[in-house]
Image 1: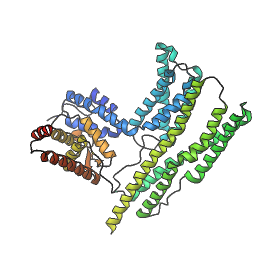
Image 2: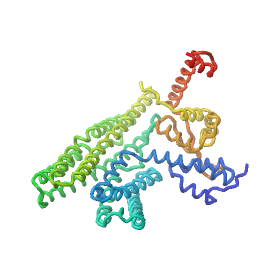
Image 3: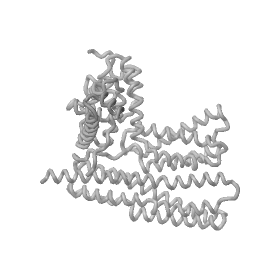
Image 4: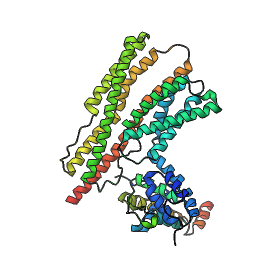
Length: 356
Length: 121
């Protein structure tokens, strides 16, 4: 049967191409072109395909716990949710940013190249969505518009922090899962190099963050007029940040695996390194959250003014969420590492079987 | 020993369709085979979503072919069952067979008469 339509010739095909996530565009558009002989049939099939393909992509690229963490962070720190007159004021921009980031992740081709630039575009898209929503709200519901300080200070500051958070733990980039039985030495070295690069960057950002936190809280200790308990809390936070920075340097930074090892030795060293990292993830609460959390909690209690019980409760809940969610994220990372360790064990077994 | 992952009914159908298509297992024939096996119209999108899920579970593997002119210069993504996929399919088919045998044992080969026997019992 002769096709009535040429590839990407019609407006429909161009739109379908745009709406299909790049990661599965090749096969989905090819199958549509092969299956459909008329533009009408093409449109009908595309409408039966795209919602599933997009939903599947969103499921694969989004991480609910991470979204919850970013959502809590944005609502409480960026948009000062507990200070706003209406809960929707901070909730609308928070939800918008989460949606924009989820869609950007789903439409991203998985690569670590130019990650910093890609994340900068993510932040620009998020900022544009928030500003647009504020313009619409200003017309239809002015009471829900964010205050000027929130827009001028909170939003840029929050997006800068979010930028580093996303550069540090890239989303939409996943290390290979499964199908390890035919792994070559080149593939395993590439995987190690990618992992090392991500960890090196993450540790660098974390250490810089620790230095900034320590400097800011040291400034608070010296110059901010607060009750003694608040000052003790600030001091503990400085010590906690210094401890975490030291720990990162001593235990978390990359321990390179020599590139001249053979396949068996490389897999073995990689498994040992993954096991070590899995231990670090499982103990994250003790070496990261506790040292920083104790100081922050004492500071929070120390600087409270009597009166607003409701606000204090909301603030405390968000502090707990922001401290607890990264721990859960680390548990998830540890589970992934365990799976990879098991897969690598299968690779070794298969290689040994082949050689014997 | 690690047990085979549990499969949903549609996952079983898609895995069987991949087996049935053999070396020609890519989107279009897999979708046709799934419709034939399920004996109903199935959205192509549901097949893609299931293929991705099976791939995430490590039950199937995929690779892209060279571009084909009849597909507007686009490549085909071929699928193949992994050993875990074969194990999972065999396990779930065995479970289905055991259920069927249990139904047969209650009163004959006809499912409906078996059902009425069960109700009477």
